[in-house]
Image (cartoon, rainbow, N blue to C red; front, side):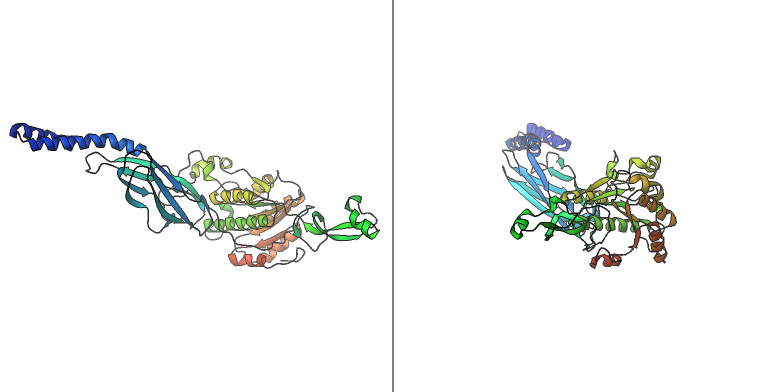
Length: 427
């Protein structure tokens, strides 16, 4: 703008000395264009509305389409608008959004691009940079931003068809060949009345028709009110890359939770990992777009402040989404060891709840911790995610202490749970 003022001053001096009318005309037109741009541009950017439309949650491997809509709500057209969206490297899929368009009065323009869910996490999309100016470049560019939005990428889920987990609770929806309990929500037929049958089970219509007392029968069922106890204390992991093993533990937790909810069972989540979103000053990495975790010093000063509160067992798809969102953000860190944490973490659970303890290995200390849960009336199941050379010894130790143990250290180990078998069978 300073250069333009200097040019006008030079032209004005030339016009006075040379007395050329055309130069005065050029000055009038230039000043008019400058005044028009100075008046129009701030109003144009103010009347510009923008929206970002996309699914805010995605599963691992999905391609997420994103649409940017710009609307000119002003009475005058906007000569040009430069649109540039910031997308993190880990999310990029195809060409980035960087275009220039013009918008007439009341006109809307839509821009499309896509991102890919390559890794679980809580990511930042944007901000969107909008720049506009006059046609001659006299007036400086005006810049506005559409604030960033966020995308949650769930952990990878491996489909499971049956788990066959034992439980002590009296009702449920998974059929069993063991007649431990009968679920009144699952009628199966009728039979003759026997001594000891309750009057509430009598089928009066069938009794009147047969002129003999008949009682309702129900399908046997075993309830699975389950809590996933996910250990993400990094020092408890000893094999290879701790972060990779911890990521696998999160994937196993997500797979189990999804399967149980699909079986109409109640499931909850308890973890000693950290949720970076709980930090009052959380930020995002510019290169990856991923939510930054707190510093090691902050965590070690007060590790329990970053451990999220437990998600109590519930059923339903909405509850599963809540668990998957937590698993998307959670990170492994040096918080509280499994041995110190496991017993107190389960105090809020009801008696008889099945506890899927996902941890690194089945050491003597870990097994003793789970034995204390057995004595407290729970039904723990050990799921070790690190490779164990002689897991038979761990399985035998767990059997003596009153619980079962599995070694699930690769995706192929989940195949044993994809094959259906009865609840009473040995997996």
